[in-house]
Length: 161
Length: 425
Ligand code: FES
Ligand SMILES: [Fe+2]
Image (cartoon, each protein chain N blue to C red):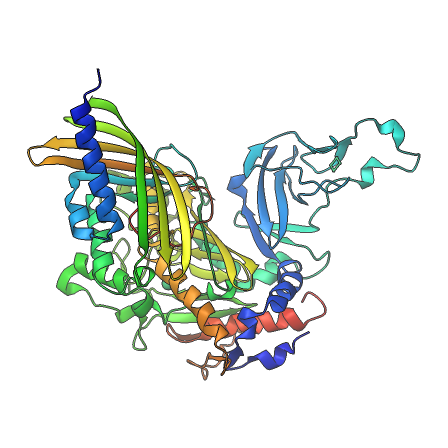
């Protein structure tokens, strides 16, 4: 028997995260994250030891804060003007309702269209989320974004993926 | 052909050098398909039978280690009717078998098998039909270079003063070797390949947010932007043959292990692994270990035309069109050190470099704006006059203030020479 309420809560959270990222609402987006946390976009391969292989993004909490600070401080030329981003998050599944540390693990697919300076790019990814239950609701403990073109030469990826 | 000498003058260069598709095609012929260019690193093919595929311009190559350990570089093209015989980026194989009609080559490039050979006549000689080989291959400090010209100056002569920096770079390892084993950060941008240079003038402006982040961390003690101004003791160098570098050490003032004002290399942690690393380095290099580390951390060099070594990373530049360039970057892992030292190099790489990092995307953005700007060529000149009056030193190198356009002029000088010289010189 599926816990439909849990699936609904997870879906709500993932869609909120997607909408804040699309809106470049860096502060509100950052507020969804746990401390500690990991924001991981692997490079070349889907799975590896990130202490031994380079990533496109491998942010801990401190670096995630730096990322949001940089994008709001002014002078991040690669986001001036900002990317317009529109994503669809689908195929949402709760894969582990009772993870370590009172967490829920979920997977989804994301199709993301980015438009900047007249150029439109399309990205697709499998995403793995770990959400921690807290009295204030979920906090994003881990987000791992497996880009379809993680092993291809990429352009400007400084928007929130 | 364009009058290149009119396009490249001592203090200025014409936009067409960066925007013309004809010039781009001529650059491939005159520079990339003639002179020494960086192709791969020895650590990418450590064992016999290992191979990797790489590109010089539009030509795909197989870099292969033969059974006897020697390195051969072959054009990825079957000698029968031309199909590419290898599609993997990395692998190990005794044979490359063409998918079209089954011709088979060994890892030394020899044609060793032809299906149904009876239909070829008497004169058919397999020994003349091996994979076409890039005629000259040589290495320096583990970096593999190739030249498609059968004759010309040897690699050591081409590298000249740059060779010492390649050697310095790998000495961050107590074994004196690095491995490009941590993967490849792959990027492309819509701008000319020559924008990827050594520029000490842009840092405080293009990388405004990097300074913001450093200031955020360091607080009031941060001497913001001081290393990248006309008052700085940092330097820009023309090493000859188009090779150039920035010296961001402020003439040796940066203490070992301290986060330097400008260096993007990882520091050495003050923990058990950091101490073990220092012990291994002292064992390898004796009293000179600190100086060896300092020199390797501060390597910031462009090896003309397509290789850069910066702090702990290797960058390879490949032109795809006048306004389209691919850059492959590799964090260089040190052989023989505690794991966490290399992890720190990876994390430090990701901070500044890569398509979602805090540094290089702003460079790339500027390169793309350059390509837009250069098309508005009502007045077509780019001004390269900063520090024009600095005279060359006795050994032939030229040293200017870090913000001088010494490197840009060095590269355009080498460019002009390659584009106009009938021979590889
Ligand atoms: S093209 Fe390779 S065997 Fe025919
Ligand atoms: Fe830069």
